[in-house]
Structures are given as C-alpha cells and as structure tokens.
Image 1 (spheres, rainbow over the protein chains, first blue to last red):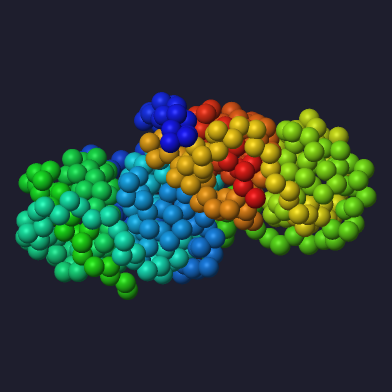
Image 2: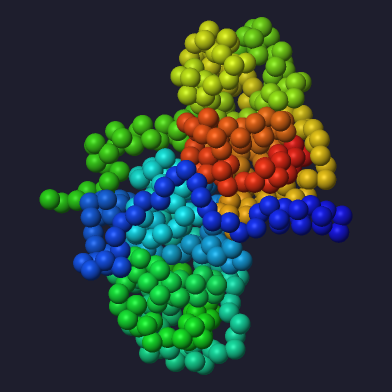
Amino acid sequence: MKFASIFIALGVFVAPHAIAESTALPHASGIESKNYVWNKQDQELEGLLKCAGDKERGQVAYEVCRGCHKNHAEGRPDAGYPQLAGQHVSVLIKQMADVRRGLRDNPRMHPFIEATAVPLAEIPDMAAYLHSLRVPTSNRKGPGGNLVRGKILYDKDCVSCHGDAGEGDAAEFYPKVASQHYPYLYRESLDIRDLMRRNANPKMVRVLKGYSDEDIEAVSDYMSRLPPVND
Amino acid sequence: MTVKCIASMAALALLMSVITSAVAAEKVQGDPAKAESIVASACASCHGLDGNSPVPGFPKLAGQSPVYLLRELKEFKLEHRKSEAMTPFIANLSEEDQANLALYFAAQKPTPGVVTKPELVAAGKKIYLEGNSDSGVPSCDGCHSESGAGSDRFPRVAGQDVEYTLAQIKLYAQHVRKYGIKAMRIVAERLTDLEAEAVAQYLASLK
C-alpha cells in the first residue's frame, strides 16, 4: 500500500502512552472507601434527574461526544467506547455525573464532559436525546464459544437486576445491557470485579467476586447477543 | 427541601450563562452589505475580498459559520484571543460591524484548499475519521462533521490553510488559545506533531 510507511510512522508516534495532560482529573471517594454508599444522591445528581430533558437541544449538545460515541451513539467496540443509544435516562445522567466529578475514573472522557465542555444543564438534554435513539442491531458480539455457561450465569446472577431481556431498570439506575458491545461489557465487568470501577454497585462486586475471567467472558458474550430492547 | 431541576435553579442558571456563552449558538443579526467597505479596507489584504485568504498562515473565512466568526471576533476584541496581525483592525470594529462582517464572510464561497504534503492526506483522514483511541483523541468528524463543514458550535475546517491549522493546534496545546472550547485544548495536547500535520493536510484536501 502506497501510504503504508506513513501509517507505520504514525504508529511509532502514537504508540499507547499514558495520558499526561494539564487538566487534573477530579477524585471523589468511591468503592475503595469504608463509608461508600452506592448511588448516593446529592444536590447535583438529584437536580439533574429532576430535569425534563429536551431531545432537540440534546442532539446539539451531543456533538462534542460524537468523536468517540459516533453519530447514532453506536459507540466503537474496537476502541472500547460503549453504545449509548436507547440507554436509560437515569443511567446516562448518573454515569455522566460520576465521570464529571471523578467517581468513575475516565481520563479519556473527562475533558469532554467537564464543566467548560458541557454545561450542567445540557446533561439531561443529552440523556433524553440518547434514550430516544434506537438501539443498533450491529453491536460487536463475543467469541461465541461458551454461551451455555453465559446463560446459566446470567439467569442465576444477573436477571434479578438487569432483567430477562437485559432491559435494565431505569428506576433503579441499572443499565440496559442487551446488545451492548462485548468488549465494553467484558472490560467493565472485570473492572467492577477488581474494584477498578469506583462507582460500582457493591451488590455487583459481590456477585462477580466468584467469577473467573472466563465466566465474565461467557456472561458478557451472552448479554451482547440479547436482542435490542427499545423502550 | 424539594430539589428542583438544576437547570432552573437561579444561581446556577446565572453561572451557566457565563459558561454557556462559549457554546451558545444565537442567530447573528446584521447586514452583510454594510461590511463591504470594511472588508476592502481592513480585511482583504490578509483574508481576501471573498474570504479566501491569499496568504499562507491566514485563515480562510469564506463559508465559515457566522456564529463562530462573531464569537471569535468578540474574543479578539476582549483580547481573550490574541493575534498581532488582528490587533490594529479589531480595535475599530463596533459590535454591529462585527456581526455584519461575520455574515459577510459566512456568505462567501470557499475555494479548495492547498495540500502541501499529499503523502500525509491518507494518514490525516484516518485520524480525522477514527481519532486515536490509545491516546484518547476523538475523531475530528464528531464535532467538525464528516465533510468538515462544522456547525455553529464548531468551526468549518474544510479547505482550511495548513499553516493556520497547525498554528492553532499549537496555540491550543500550549494553552495560548485558552478561551476556546476546552475539548479542543485536550485534543491538541493529545495529538502528536505528526498526527497534527497529517490532519492539517487532510483538512486542506476537504472541499
């Protein structure tokens, strides 16, 4: 290929490096602290959840997210960016707020959700817009080798919160997991088990504690193959 | 105390009006015809009569979003955004002049850009459309749109002058252009020099 050498040259320059930049990430104490309360409501989160989001304003506000989460909020499985289309408003608002205040560590995303990038008032608008989008059917599935095990684990441990169809529970802030990208489900589940996702629900940590990496792979694969659920 | 929607809380709304001013998109009101004499006497030697800059290093303004143009003119006036070349001209522009100029240049037809290193265009396209997820660079099309036409919040970049693009990325990365949307500062910090140059070449190739 004619430009191969350029890509190789770029590869050398863009080899993974730690993101070291001027903007310090905020840090809120999370699951690692003794008195952690999951989904503790404060004025900011409650105030955001009370807003009636405006889809049209949300579509404009979402422009700054499209570089990663893409035009139809389908995310990018190859880059680890989750699909956001059709997700529950409550989940979207909580996760955006958590990244913003440093309860969910996300150095790649933080600059694009912090105060000067996104005014607080636009968060409910974006959530309303994203929730209104149809869940794409073209999400990345897992390797497919252990779906029977995946179903057994899902039915035993996950159904009570995430639902038979993987529809989640908006009132409880439980995300829709059906048709999410496999690499994202896998990584987040590992992070929750290993206490790396600091805004995790301790109930989920307890469930995943007994899971091997292979178990997590199987159940993530199963979830990625659940058909899209549109509210 | 009953918690209300955060967007309707008075104190926060006030704070937000300050923050949002950087991203708010209000329609520009004015008369582009009234800008013609100012363009001829002040702007044309660098930006061209039709907003297609004849001089490398100076931005092409033709076809740019009027909202963006007006926002930047205001930023120059406030000295938030600094440019030695712009300083003598901006001082004399009234608010009305600024709006008229923004509408004038927005209405001009952009000419194709000049690619100076064609061998970098393909690599630049990859960055523009895919970003670099290792370093957390989003794809550029997310904000600037696939065609490079931009929006009211994010400027048109299609056909832009290579030197100008590179200079701006540098100014963002060094926090000299610090009042712009912060997302761009982070992108500029995360881009390597070679990635920035490749993207600049790709932008110039967009029509």
